[in-house]
Length: 390
Image (cartoon, rainbow, N blue to C red; front, side):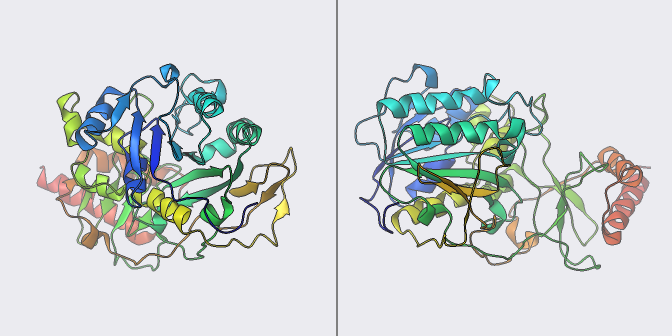
C-alpha cells in the first residue's frame, strides 16, 4: 500500500443516498465542498434543500449518469432496510439495499480517489456476510485498496450506535485513515449499584433487551417496520422518566438543533425521528474526514490473513491481493465524559403511564436482567403517575 501520506488534499465530494446531510456536514469540517447530492425521499429532500441551498440535488440514483468533474470523494450510506435486524432481511436481493450496485456502476465510469460507505453491522453477518463481501469484491475489481471498521458513535457522542464504515482509496492507504487510532475505553456501562446518573433505554422493548446505558442512550431508530417513530426514554435519578426532544435527538447525531425542521412542510413533526434515525453520525464522519488529510500510521504487523469462508470480523482490510483481520476496537478515540443532564438542552417528554406500565410488565416477565435501582425506578414511576392520574 501507499506510504502514510495523501496524494492531494480532497476538495470536492458527491454523496449518494444523502439522507439529511451527515456526510456533507462531516466533510465540510475539513473544507470539502459538496457538488452533488442524491436523495429520493421527499422529506429528506426538504431538509437538504434548506441546509444546502446551493448544492445540486438529484433524485433517483438509477438515473444519475456520472459524477461532476474533479470529484475527490464519494460518500454513500446506502439504504439498510433489507439488511437491518429490524428490516426485511432480504439482503442484497432486496430492492432497497441492492441500490449499492449503483455506486459501483458510477465508479466504473468515473473513478474517484476516496470512497466512504456506511451501513448497519448486520451487513457483516446476514447471509454469510453477503453484503460486505459484495462491496469488497466490487472495490477490488475497480482497483481500490480498502479497510472497514465497526465504529460506535459512543466515542464521539452519548449514543450507543454501532455502524460499519468502509474507506477505500485508489492511491492512498485507507488503513491509516480508518484503523489507526484505538481506545479500550468503554462508555455507557452501568458503573455502580446506585442510581447516580441518567440511564437511557428502549421503553418499547423490555422482555429480551432494553438497551440500557449510563449517561447515554441506545441507538436512535428510524422507527418500527411500519414506520412508527419510537424515541428512547431516559430514567433520571430524580424519579422522572422521559423521552428526549427531537432537537436533542438531532444533537445526539451531531446535527445542530432543528436541522430537520424544514421537513415539517411535508410531514408530521414525528416524521423527523425517522430522518434522524436513518442518519449517519456527523462526528464520526468528521473524524474520518480529518484522518484523510492527517493520516496516522497503522501497525498491521500482528494482523492475520482473512481466509475465504470465514466469518467477517468487526474490522478488516485488503490490498487487492489478500485480506486481513484487524483487531482494533469499535472505539477509535477517547472523549470527555458528560452527564446527560448536562448534554440535554431541551425539555424531555414524560413517558405515559400506559407506556411505563407496559414496559414494567415486559421487564418483569422477560429474560433480560437489569440493575435493581433501574427496575425500582420504573416501578416507583408507575406507582406515582398512576396515583396522580387517579
